[in-house]
Figure (cartoon, rainbow, N blue to C red):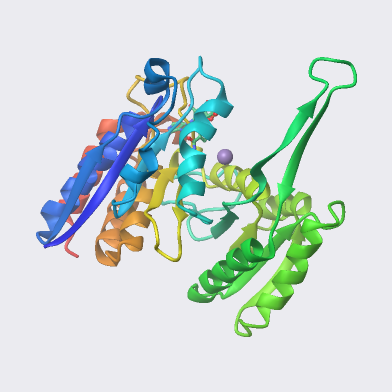
Amino acid sequence: MREYSIAAIPADGIGPEVIAAGTTVLAALERRDGGLKFNIENFDWGSDYYKKHGVMMPADGLSRLKKFDAIYFGAVGAPDVPDHITLWGLRLPICQGFDQYANVRPTKILPGITSPLRQCGPGDLDWVIVRENSEGEYSGHGGRAHRGLPEEVGTEVAIFTRVGVTRIMRYAFRLARSRPRKFLTVVTKSNAQRHGMVMWDEIAAEVAEEFPDVTWDKMLVDAMTVRMTLNPRSLDTIVATNLHADILSDLAGALAGSLGVAPTGNIDPERRFPSMFEPIHGSAFDITGKGIANPVATFWTAAQMLDHLGEAEASARLMRAVERVTGSGILTPDVGGTATTKDVTDAVIDAIHSSNA
Ligand code: NAD
Ligand code: MN
């Protein structure tokens, strides 16, 4: 038996709805495979926990998660808790505490899903965005002086280190090398930001020497939004800073049809700690409890998790099932359908059991 321990943290809003769907799909993969077992433990951390205990997770949260093979995460965010508390109280401490420095965000247009880009269908857009996930603009440094006074100043300090930039650059070049086109685009803003961003450009050029078989180019982040929209076929693997890639990957999700289909893995490439897999969307309180949250992103990130665990076959089987279901038009409202979360989940489970492979 190949057994994996998984910590599920559904957290807020639609998080519990999509993680429940993902958990039943993992159970279907177990039954289909016969030799695969997921021991899933649920953690009730998040905004409700915060309202009871004053913290998003207990003080020993990270040490309790450490023994798991992977973390399956829903979303954080509640209408009545400030966003910086939910984010810095749960998701970011896990990413930073476990040094999940590579945030990997695959994007493609799934069968049956319409891209807002004219003339773009399945196959036309196939990207992986690598987001630096441990430093940069989200390192948490900065401050406020003269609070509330006319001369108040707030600073938000982006920190880039040679170690941090080199390791994400190597990760991105390695990933680009593993894909058919062997092509990487390095995104910065080194015209206006002349310190850390120029260092990114220099380190990119240095690391590129280690990967002579990978073709690469550079883009400024503002121009990158134009290229993604007007010339999507010209891109493949993309690496950018924490902030820039955060923004670009929401755009990528929208161009692929919906945030509801966009997955992400927060990876510790050195495998010292568990990596964390989640949909990129938030808690979507506008649709919470309606039963219409799109579970596809949460299924796709489960496929990423399976790949990370070395279960490539189960991962491919899950993605084939998802693509079969989207292709047959069983879609939630965010992608133009009328199906519920449960309809899509049941259909994916059927497809897992009925596939020959
Ligand atoms: P959001 O991603 O929650 O929602 C944006 C829009 O997309 C909403 O209209 C929502 O209904 C829709 N949407 C998102 N996921 C969907 C799905 N699976 N199926 C169907 N529709 C979906 O972003 P927001 O509204 O800006 O933020 C809501 C809360 O989530 C905030 O508190 C924010 O801080 C938080 N947030 C958390 C994360 C995270 O946990 N990683 C990411 C982004 C936002
Ligand atoms: Mn984001």
